[in-house]
Image 1: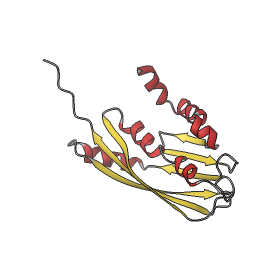
Image 2: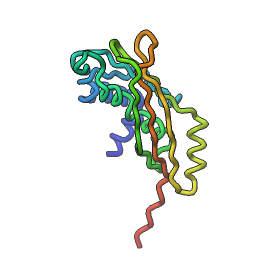
Image 3: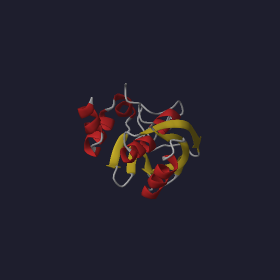
Image 4: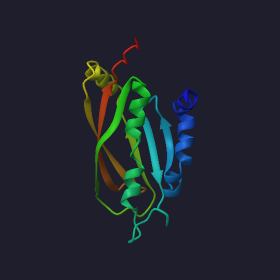
Length: 161
């Protein structure tokens, strides 16, 4: 299990695993850029028969799933195994029909990560809300996503007597 964890922390391997993950591959979701050190992930998804809805535009569930895990992934990469990071809530607003390839840039500021460390130092939960936009090829905003994450520093396990 430890070797699998180390492999997951390697951005090249993580990108490969995500790009071959059956739900992502089936929907045509592709990670174009994965730079965990710079806290940037770019995801894209072409419109295909596998991810379109009844009226021929992007299926809303696919639009959301293309951005779902990445804030958590970036934070876990930087905070490490001493922290719990969970999705707490999510909201997506559809603004325009997606009729072509769409993309999203997921970013977290390094100063934000340091602030989370400071706030979680006392083992209290920290809630953070992030906003991002999904755009089509011509730059039209297709959807806006709001994600709330729960972050907490893990308490040390007591040493068995």
